[in-house]
Length: 619
Image (cartoon, rainbow, N blue to C red; front, side, top):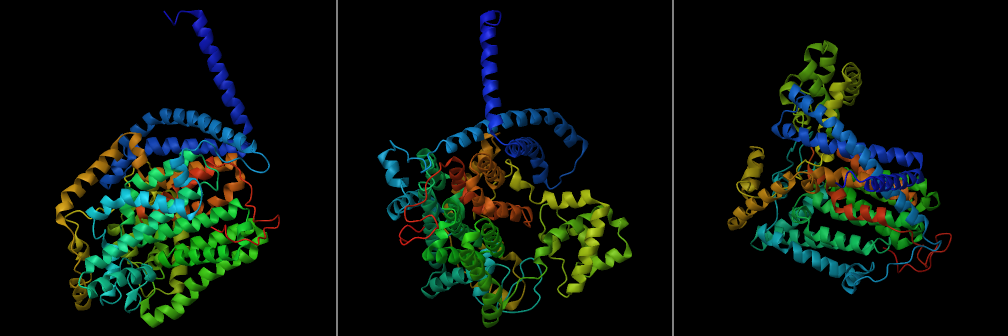
């Protein structure tokens, strides 16, 4: 027998020793912080993968209770999760160490570009210039064409229909939180997106077809999204990323079904996300050139304009832009003037021009001042539900001044903040808010576990690979009438809603249902299905790339500032919807390119002080 042969056993032992020594040598090349983060990443991936899969069924059922059965399942899976963590630590440490060694071996002038790249690949993603970008855009759009046809005129759900109804004269409509005043429009959703989308609807209506107007909007948005993704794929040539990764990224953009499904959606998140790609490319260019790009006037103007666009297409976008500008300015202080432009231009538009000039002139009602308190409300509702008998008279009074206390327990939904946000009082003063926050803190010190569960369970699907990548398929019976059921029963609102006349082809409904079922079945496949899950793209890949860059090429780490801020926004999201993670999904290829990039020299047009006379190479 093979097992009984001593020579085979000795060879096996020697091979095991060689592999173990190689792994140990690789791990020792990493710094202690890098090893620690790699181990933490391995634990995170193992535990969220295994435990998250176990708990996902209960999450979907609407009751996530730590009963005896669940505890028994988690206990049985614990040894396997620990084993996976140890194995992943060794493998990831080896990968990161070898990436570090490869990057360190690059010559002082930067690694040489790859040779022997297939001509077809070279024509598609060989360089960052307009011709390859156009070619990649056409490839992506060709693959997206079936989605444009089947889902024509586009995917319309509650949010965009709510915006369109206002453009047809309904007046400002409450969405989740009560409005504090009346007007023509509500800024709960970005007013710029509302007006752009409504403009296409009204133009189509004037020409005899609202559906045609929406289809033109969707087609243009698809072109912009495809072009932005194509630019990201071609930009990888600047990072000297492997050509196989570039072509794989192009295939991902063209074939991963959730990308076109959101590209043809009328949600403001879809517009925000393709703009985010271009803005993120600017961030990477700043890091890649060590802020030398910020000495180009044209680049600074583009960077500031994209920051303004992000702040106008998603309400939290302004905070993402400003926080990134501040943190990057602290790292690259020599370009402080350029960062000041990138900071103050969006801030001026978001905090001065829109609220004090545009909103009053157009009759726009600002979003509720309590909207940012959803995380606090969620914890309070969970506390009242589980420990209501412990709430004192003073605590109840402080809560009731801001929220309708008597409805908190029955309204609480562990998966979303929206129901409890609808209970806020519009007449609450700043003193009431302050007193409520002090009471919130005092109550949290009594039962911190209740707060931790209530706050942490809402964004849980963003970190669970088994969680379904939710999207809006616009399949029957979810037609326009379905989404308009919640429009207020007021004459102006009902009359505006009745004016919506956007027809779609019902012959594709059965195909949509089959497509939806197929995607759900793919997600349900163990392990392999995780690549179709939400957590893989929303947190797994970004964290993997960030820690890998920290371990192997720290000069690129500042590029992950927007990634960290985007993850933070996910944690405080009111609901674990995939559309909130869309920017991370769209830029996933760029994050992988940063990890596998090879050090490159600065463009020839930059001198050692970051000055340039040639602006032709600006992004």
